[in-house]
Image 1 (cartoon, helix red, strand yellow):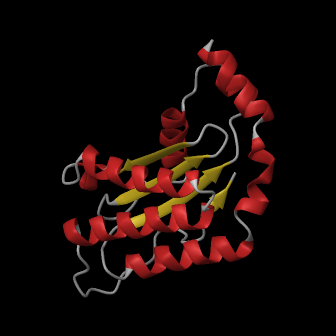
Image 2 (tube, one colour):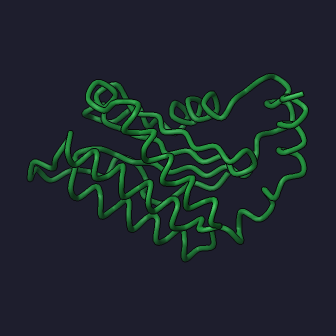
Image 3 (cartoon, one colour):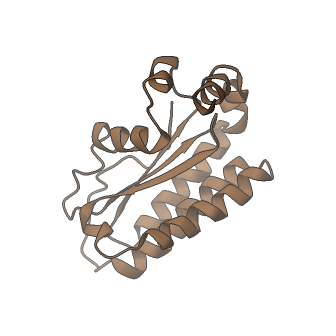
Length: 167
């Protein structure tokens, strides 16, 4: 039953509204939030918002967490100098949010800290505040990174794009 619900949600949900939910102004605000946060810490944050999973992925049992892990690798979020990349992934069709952190961060940040961020994001999504939901996630993740990986004054290269990726 659960698989059938996932198939229906991914096929017929409101995923086609991704452009309306995330217009250029929202994407620019999210990118600005990522850039501002990265001035306060040594982490690298990447945002990916996916409208839905392909039919074959759902029938193969791919979960939002699986997809986030795949994107973490594909987008090379793991390939940062200090092993401090973080992927904030949103799967709109299933109302799922996943945060995948590289090993340097995972050693210092608990699952409960990431879950608090996803909870705040879900609250904003439930109100229909798509831009605010992602900006909240970015800002809170940035604050967490600033606490565990504060900027040290050394000039850094921006290793990952700040602009969110819409899939």
